[in-house]
Image (cartoon, rainbow, N blue to C red; front, side, top):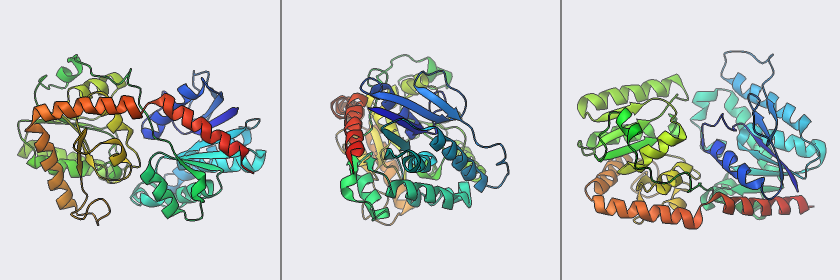
Length: 398
């Protein structure tokens, strides 16, 4: 079987979970089928990449919606180039429209992986302006007309069927993401930690992610004022989605540093080796996302034997076993599906972090249980095998 994998991100241009997914899944898929990658951006050295695409030069402008228009121009070029394959596999709204057009143009099966859903991320209107309506259109068109959909969690499948009721549930298949435990494993070296002026062995609470509304960093920063002051709070986060949220985070970090101290902000995207060492030395890894269909970063932390405190939302409860590999935090007093009460959420977040800081032996047990869970359930070879089965079903569909 020959498959064309469509993606915005591909090494070395990887900045989010969807990019991590494509990078590792493609490395496994190439061993079991004929795979070619079509990616946004500059030319790649990888033999997997058949072609890279850049947006049309004519689409220039400062308005927010131009970003979405430029994406759609790449989709048109991708669709024109994808031919002679059995299946086209799109990822995120950035390529869903390209996958749909490829299906129409070339009569090939279209498989979609749903890493998130645009209607469940309304804060993106702040980032994309009128382009948010275009991103929703691209996603809706691609998903509703796809031959098969891969949901990265059971909760994600439920969300797909709720947001897009026209989709037949039989076309939606759950395939969990994975992690490479040979790469993500405990690193006892301390050079990265020391370069951040953090004392090895001292209590360390870590956030690793993007500065976006979705990842909930502002809530962690507010909660951190009630976290044990003896613990260092490490924020590993680079460029913000918008100037507004960037300024908000900068203000909160500054205020926290003055009121509490023991705050370190590594304001850049960490290299993989650096991230692994930071996770390995974390007393607690925190994922305060308000929306997270899966959350690969939690797997990465667990593989490095870091106990996790994370929001009980989306696919996270399928990854983090509450009370076994970490602790889950509710967004409101009514549980996962309650109306968000951010004051409650932030107090619960601080309480769960402190509970693990106060019981290091329990935290260590959870960390080891986390790695065991990764080895048992969340590896890329397993994900690739299940994905190839979805390709077969899509290609055979009438």
